[in-house]
Image 1 (spheres, helix red, strand yellow):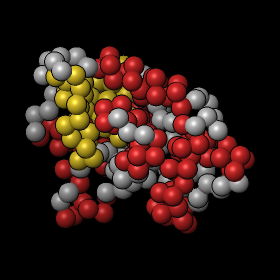
Image 2 (cartoon, one colour):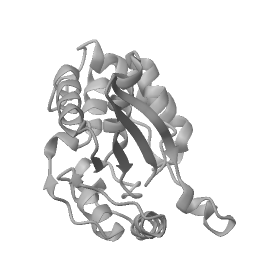
Image 3 (cartoon, one colour):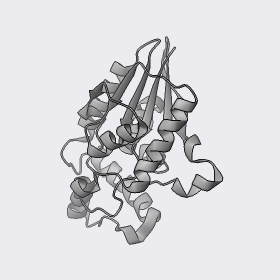
Image 4 (cartoon, helix red, strand yellow):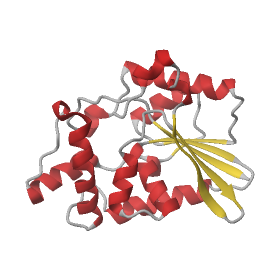
Length: 218
């Protein structure tokens, strides 16, 4: 049996208002990644292939984990949230929540973005169908019997992977990606019958009492 391990990047610049300024790890994000790397090494986790998205936060997360990607693949890059939210505001007058609204604002906003994007009412740099297609393709390639593949990526990519594995509609996909922690571990078992979800949103490297503060969603 093979395995695909999906890792969400460490905490990025959560105060950003555009993709460029968001795309860098905070000091906490680097620490989260270092702890994750230490945890994986302590438990003897070894990988046949290391993949990473091409975004800066993906590369910084992999480096802080102590991983050297065999390949950086743009198909593992995040959905275009900032442009999509701008498109939703233009189409429906729904503003993107700012940092003062906290997680509640984002939790209410993301499902609306996802539904409108899925229904082709809005579009950023790519369509929902294109995003879905590229995630399904990279997952299919990573499904290698008897091999372990680790992918450093983003929450939206993980959400789309779960949509594919669990048959989720767009709203349920939005709901399942909202609680995904920074540097969380998601495991996909590769069996002869096909891929199946084997673990979701694990943060064993952050579960100690003195690290609970470091469990972040954004």
